[in-house]
Image (cartoon, rainbow, N blue to C red; front, side, top):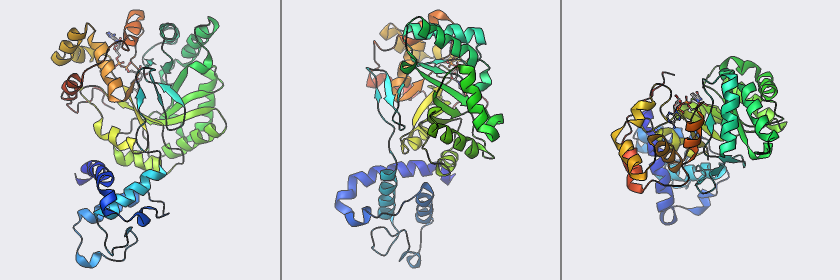
Length: 367
Ligand code: NAD
């Protein structure tokens, strides 16, 4: 139970660090060259939460400000040292341009088309329509069985001069069954997509038995120029994200998790921001079979009416203003167009708060 609150405590302490540091901290100690990990921070937090006795409190390696104690100021200094080693804080979205610069240095569109449950033929048409309508981000996965269709849709748009390869951003996912042979999985996705490189590849699910090896295969592919950015999907516990991040070298650029107004992913979003990692929403509209629940929500419907927009557009705009990349899925030409028409209005702070208040911590998917 206590662990659930650790990220919140960490965040409060992080804020504290920046508020009180000029008055209370020894700058020399803050420049300590020791590299601290999330585990060090946990150790010190656990120590402090265990209400240490006087005899525990001197001469320990975590005494960063050399005052003979392990205390909250050491924790603040450790946190600051940790953050300065990381890219720290999720990068801001450019809502005018519709992009975010990932911690990998690559620019990524913040609104894209999802292709879950689309056949190869549907994926081809949907991707083509999306690119024609202005989308530049496409999300697929090896397990969707439609990477070939996605590749064809991209090629059709390029052949017609709608966009160039460099202008688009393609995401695919490595499936869990392929984790022990990541190198082949990456090449197979490249071949099916018909691409020389993939903009972003993510591990589809946490799988502690071999996801580190799979991630390392993606790191190798980044070295080789086959992948540009790499990230994760379906990691729902901060500890699980840290496990992977601490065992690998490249910080995940993005985490794709089920996220929508009834499951806003606040805890994970705050946690991954420490790594400069961005949240991406799957099931942004609630997913097949659940969209009616969100579309019919009284608050969302009322906001939609006030703006002369649909509930889908309001929800998607909420994602972007909340700092979530959104990838609504559809094979319907009109819906695809509708879902992209969200850059001509914005939600007020009050409306954002009303939607924030809808949080129920309720996932629609069972995995
Ligand atoms: P979604 O929330 O995007 O909802 C899709 C449903 O909404 C479909 O039934 C679609 O017909 C309907 N819809 C879309 N736009 C509409 C509109 N304007 N009006 C009315 N209905 C509309 O769910 P999704 O497609 O499952 O998720 C989005 C994408 O996220 C997927 O396509 C896929 O690319 C990705 N995804 C990833 C994972 C993962 O495990 N990483 C899981 C599921 C989905």
